[in-house]
Length: 100
Image 1 (tube, one colour):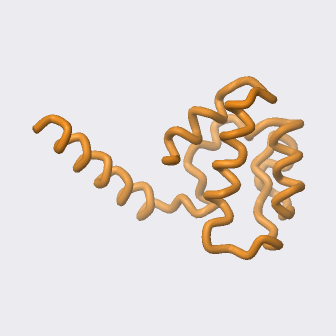
Image 2 (cartoon, rainbow, N blue to C red; image 1 turned 45 degrees about the horizontal axis):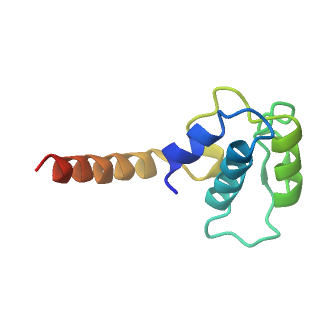
């Protein structure tokens, strides 16, 4: 699932199936290339990326408290400017292919 789809799911009401799928997608992205016991910044409304928590704890916070409003470029979780730029190039190439 691409990041834009995950971000759309996170806009769904809590705790709908769509929102929970978005939380799983976010965590899968945030843990890409990391060990399962790694602590990451928690992007919930209460922690505001200030606290490092394990995956299960971040999951619980996102389900109970919700994702921080306006946190759309996930800089604390691996979505760097280079990552964003590379994905925009991939999408624009795909869109050009569709037009042909």
